Amino acid sequence: MRILIVKTSSMGDVVHTMPAISDIARHRPDVRIDWMVESPFASLPAMHPAVQTIVPIAWRKWRKKLWQKETRATIGRVRKSLRAEPYDLVLDLQGLMKSALFASQAKGLRAGYDWASAREPLASIWYQQVATVDRSLHAVTRSRLLAAAHLGYAIEGEPNFALRMPDPSWMPPTPKPYVVLIPGASRPEKLWPEERWVAVAKAIAARGLEIAWIWGSKDEASRCVKLAAQSDGEIPPFLSVEHATAVIARASACVGLDTGFSHIAAAFGVPTVGIYCDHEPGLVGITGRAYVASVGGRGKSPESGAVIRLLDEALSSNPKRGIR
Image (tube, rainbow, N blue to C red; front, top):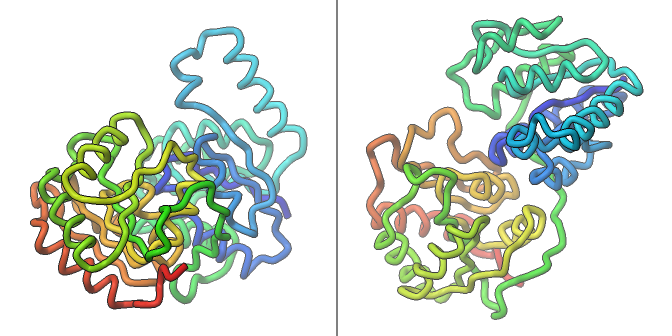
């Protein structure tokens, strides 16, 4: 049986889908799993041992040049490859109009959320098979339940992300265990005050640990440079998602905003504190097999003292982590 998983973005959403893939592999070992994903995040599905083929797309790039001949030709090639061999199931785990449209480019039975369950209800009209999943559940659980409903098994046990550890291209130069700090986010509403980051960084240094400031854009790099100048820590050169993951996955702990890298840390079992400033963490809170904590919410930016206390709990939860 061949399945195409459609979960294209964003980084955190892709990470949240991993336990559903583990469930499929466990309950349906006969299934071959392919995954359609935005190309910048393609290295993440490739870290899951059950995923056979990655189908990269570049919608974020294509939509800016949709009427250019080269863009249309590229989209045509992707569509041709998707339709070269039929899938037994094309499973849209995203539930958006754009993901439903992408799913329709493949040949095979399209399945997804029903009208009441999809994030964008109109997406459900593109599916030939639908299932009901409570919208109040965490994103990880929703993906697991949707896959189970369409493939005929019951989910059980805690989420298993099952990701393979990538090799690093950069590591902090000192041999000390280190804490990853992730102060950047996709929107300014998600940012946490600089003086609170400085307080957390100084607390980490006082505990004899190194700091790695992780960034993914030019603005985030500038922010990290400014914060490190007021406290301590190492700032890597630009790292791909795969190489940034390699650094994050080997950390003693992580403190990060509501961003994909924070969810990656938790998925690899790194004790993680997630800081939420723009919305409530309930449906997308930090989830992983080790210590996790989500603090803050819409209009409830946490104080540095609260984050430091949670960080101490994270570090004490597994004191052997991060010894290199």
